[in-house]
Image (tube, rainbow, N blue to C red):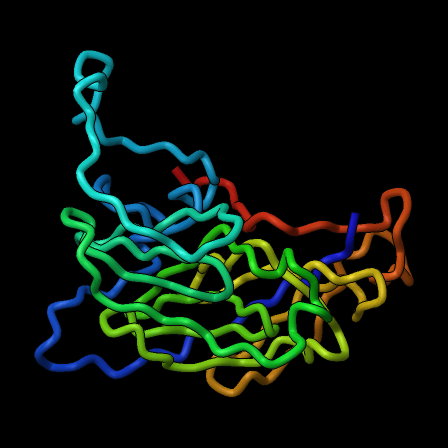
Length: 247
């Protein structure tokens, strides 16, 4: 088991084009998502993974067939796409995100992050995996393999901002899950390698400046660090965080 680093970022939002028809995703929509949308990992903050849609039932499920198919990046995959306003946002191997038309599978945009040389030799192969991404306002939000949080314009796939979490050459923390958004904050977990650091903690940073506030430790005993490898001293956070439902 490993110790984790959770990071919270405020969201710096892009200016909206006057001609845009994109409807920003709000905190209220995340708390009570429309039945037709899948706006976060497991759909709701309580992680039930329940869909209220009833078009497919026991009587017609055998009639389902393939509508379209697309290739994703070659590699291991644990992805959960987001569905919003007729678009699927699909995270993939090595910090690749695609947006496609959910009805036809037609390509809309693709973002692939350029990684520094020697990254995976330091942080490990598992860093290439990612379960989920997040959507908020007009942004698609993710963690990067090189220890950044970053945001893309949901309509164009263009990079809006990025903020360094840790120096991957000094603190080779990894993640196998993306962030969630709660109360306008972007929350994500980081799993430290045995020789990494710092102490397991939750941090809140400004999405605009990256300024870090005082971290709160999540280790289960005083003095526990990422070098701790036994007993109950670890605080693993390899899945996205959950909260109790307010409903």
